[in-house]
Length: 502
Image (tube, rainbow, N blue to C red; front, side, top):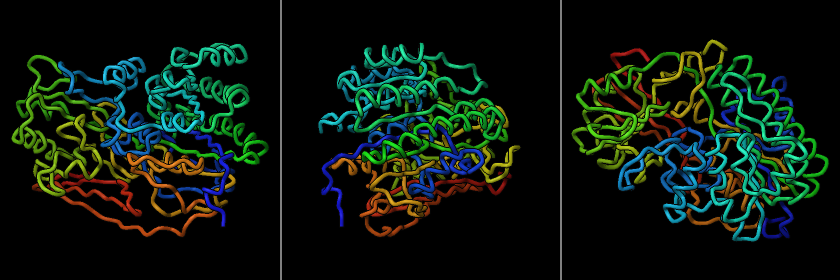
């Protein structure tokens, strides 16, 4: 039997990310190339992301193999209360990401990333991404100091190799500008695909490369999950991926290149508006979206909610949580542990259950309530939202369609044409990549090697499923987790009220 240690490490890995692509949108008619890969490789049928199901923390989990309580990027935005003057951090800003890492002595991310691990082991790494500038930077925030290649599909300033950027732009023209909201972002995706195939691969043959498409997430947010522009973006992405797949089948796979295709989260559709700020202000707390004089609570009201109290107290936390739980939009709620699984506030669960117990974490974490109803496009999965218009796609919460993400692996060492029902998560990709390269994973990684997908791997490991429940008055919530070996995944969660229709 062949084992990973028997390999002389000729293996390489290319990870292709489709931001926000729901697995149930992959089909022979809409995405024929992804469907072709599924037949060639192994599909993760129970793949989950981390909570919150947002882009920046999920991508950080992908490249560290660790949950947010370890790597510390606890959301797209969070309040930095460690600084002398607390400030709101928006990780979509690449310059801020670099400044924060420098100010922290290189410890913005609390776990080593793929870029660092590969460099230590003498391996090369390249990132090509059309996500936000900050997301592109977080996929390898040490790229400059490690002299590793990063290219952006929209922001030339993010490039960490001036020579590579010059070669790419000489061949393809200037880096494309971002497109207006509501217009599918196609140019950036084609630019990066060509950059990978025509320049980055021929020039450096990276041991690991990430090609990250910012669609269909952007179009879903501004048009809807099943809207014509979103479907147009998905078809276009599939054609770009088809170029990679054609190359891989003819040249890559015979030379030991493995493909991993993933999305960092799913999406659901807004069906009703939540009066979040009005509810909080009715408690007498002075709420704001940035810290400042007279502000009692900083409220980050994205699709996943985070409340930071200026002067945290159990009493204040209970008051705010109690008010939210009376509203029909209130989904699962998490606070610091009171004891075991119970949070400080009655009816809340301890935030460590969703791997959100970190010094940067909010005093109150919550999601907006969802259900399995069909949206106007016929897709299951709806939710309330405080900001996004009805009919548009969102993510961040714990609905199964937000937590569910795409996962397909293919290559010389991967079983072919199988669908694995073993639970898996976004933290599993990094340790699996390292295993394919013959590199030991660091102890900071919470993910596991997906050994059941490997041609020399073990049988399907045993699975243990658990449910964690809490209630207060008519409010009830249930969090579902699943354990495979020593690895625990957050599956999904929901909430209901006996006095409200969900």
